[in-house]
Length: 254
Image (cartoon, rainbow, N blue to C red; front, side, top):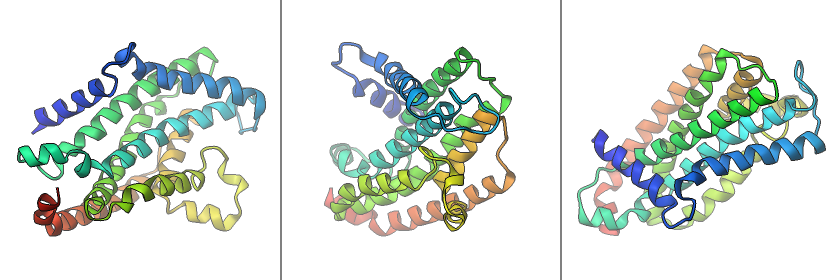
């Protein structure tokens, strides 16, 4: 099963850029352009002051660290919400499991995230920002958020087979969730009531933990992991229950 997941992930990474002149080099070029764009534009246009950080690049580091993890999360959720419909041809030909093959999406997006964070670390060194040991927790937190995207995405993917409107709704929900997550702005500009609501938002908590690790070398709290385990258990149980109820009808619908 692990070999099959890796096969799908590798195929996904290769097929994504098959036929392009630069091929898999886009895996590096896309995050590199994102980092450089934010570095050039936002250091000039937005000089939001963050405590203890260089005003020239402090906000840029805050923004990029959040954007990279958010992109991994949103890409996973978006792709998984259409997984069963997109793979309908394979499901008709061979007996694929409902859950394991879709892990290839998480794996391929995690590879992209690792490359992006590596380039980001290099950028931080170039501008003179200290790389704290806690930086190493950033990909782990990103993977944790992608794990939640896996559970929620596959639940939406199961429903999308019977309710095609789900696919159209996901981008809108992700856009709303993006602006409800302190990535472009900082948490302290929000009213106290809204700040309290963020304590129950997994993207806000996990991305915020990434930003604190990257900027200040702070390790995430145990309570964060406890909340993640609770949410993962709820999503996992919901996915298994939904899959059990829809398994037979799913294959007929595909």
